[in-house]
Image 1 (spheres, rainbow, N blue to C red):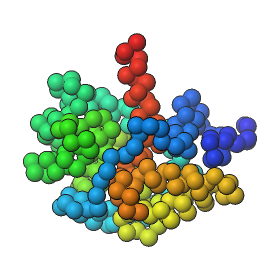
Image 2 (cartoon, rainbow, N blue to C red):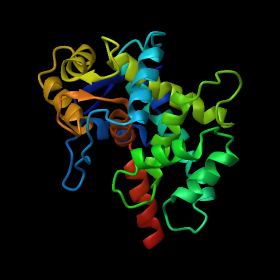
Image 3 (cartoon, rainbow, N blue to C red):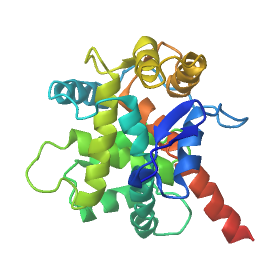
Length: 257
């Protein structure tokens, strides 16, 4: 077996079966490249709503259980598998986009939750819709839909059996939660700049550009520029790192050709 190492941007990753997917190099490269014009993250604020407080409390409780991630490299190697799993979620999104508008409105999200047996009240569904409708256009796009489902996964109390009736996707969500827990070293429910830089420096020891990469990635996550990243901010950035947006753009181009 070839024991050479493949270099992705400023990361040096071991060749393995998890990175043989032809998209894996591009997925990982998305992590080390700077934002392009038009990619700026929308602004958010420190927790001010009941839902935000609940997410923070639940995350802190989850963090007390620890994480299976050993290094940031472990997370990077999971990018291709996570990407493949999340793209399968597109069928669920399209199923509940009943008017085929390309987004899910409040009524459609309510129907989605009922069909997936997510036992949220109407008020809770309204709150999570507003929390993730970043553009305030009364429509949830595919990326926002994934963030909603991952937040639901975190918040669901029933840990027996499946939380949403989609166990394969829930395994992916657990990996995403685990990744956040790994980064949040002091377990306060937020990822700080120092925590992000420290995690990447451990992976890219001795490489001059590692600090710059860490700062770029942190700035992508820290929408409100307060120096702290909550779980929702992390999720929106994470979907970009794995290449999900690139896959969406490719699908649109193929449709238009």
